[in-house]
Length: 192
Ligand code: GTP
Ligand code: MG
Image (cartoon, rainbow, N blue to C red; front, side, top):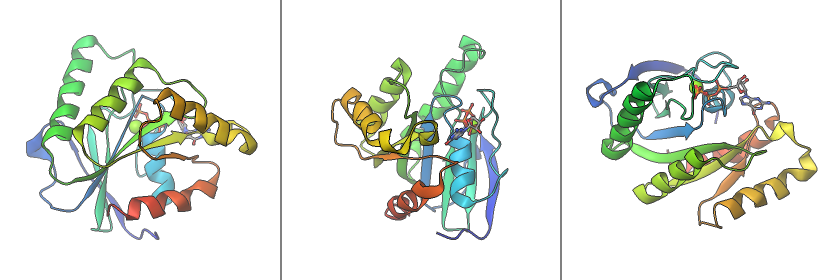
C-alpha cells in the first residue's frame, strides 16, 4: 500500500483519550525494543513518524497513528522494561488491558517477537492473552536481518513449536530487509 499522509494523532492512557472514530485499528504489541515502532515506520516508509530508540522503554503510552484516514496503527508500550518501577508497569498493564478489552475498533492484533530468541515468559502470557480475546491475531517474527536468509524458515519453525503449533499465522519481518514488507501489507489489507 502506498501511504500518502500518515499522521501521529494522539497518545492515550485512558479510553476518554482514544480518537473519536470508527476506523479500523491494527494494534502492535510485544516486548520492549523488539521493534514495534520501527515496524510502523517501515511499513509507511517514514523514518521518524513513530518514535524509536535503541534503548528499551521508548513508547510509554498508547500511540495512535492515522494512516490516510483509512485505518490506524496503534503502538503499545512494550513489556519487560526492567527500569520501569513495578507500580508504573502495573499502571501500563492496566491501560493496555483496558484498551484491548474495550476498544471496538480493533480489527487486528499483532504480537511482535524476536525471530532469534526463544519466547520469554511475558511473550507467552501476551500470546495467550491475545489468543483468548478472540480478536484477529497474527505473530510477526522480527529482526530477520540478524540471521541468514537460508535460516529464516527453521527459526520460524522453532517459534511455531514454542507456541505449540497454535493456529495463528506467523510472518518473518525485518525493517532492514525490505523483502518482507509486501507480504505483510497483503496480510494487513485483509483487516483494513
Ligand atoms: P518500546 O517502545 O520500548 O516498546 O520498543 P519498540 O518495540 O517500539 O522498539 P523500537 O521500534 O524503538 O526499536 C528498538 C531498536 O531495535 C531500535 O534500535 C531499532 O532500530 C531496532 N530494530 C527495530 N526493528 C529492527 C529490525 O528489523 N532489524 C534490526 N536489526 N533492528 C531493528
Ligand atoms: Mg516503541
